[in-house]
Image 1 (cartoon, one colour):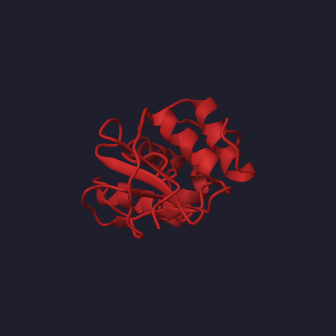
Image 2 (image 1 turned 90 degrees about the horizontal axis):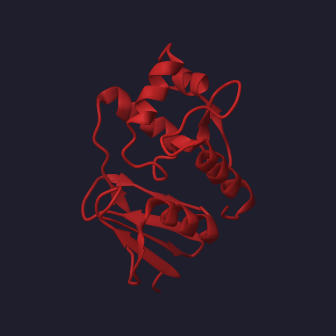
Length: 155
């Protein structure tokens, strides 16, 4: 069964397709090793894609999605830990630092700032202990993505 919709772009993320099938948002690149599938609501996924400047394209998507992110060993460990944060939940930079055995919350922020797959590797779920914290695309977008994951709406 084809997805409800799918999108494709060779812009911000490089070649990638995103679609929704059976209530799950899926993303795929032509090749890669990082499997990605999330229960991000359709409206939020559409908004996320529009924010990235993606173009609407229809067509089938595979059931399992593979992506590859390139970075240092430390960055990859941070991004992998970030992927384990469930949709609708948040962790502080300090909590993520503890999870990867690092003493520096600032180093976590730097690694997340180098994330090549924002939205796919959900760095927006990592917040400062005293507030929202930084985000490459701005605090407003970070807040909107966090809220969309909780209530299923796109802002």
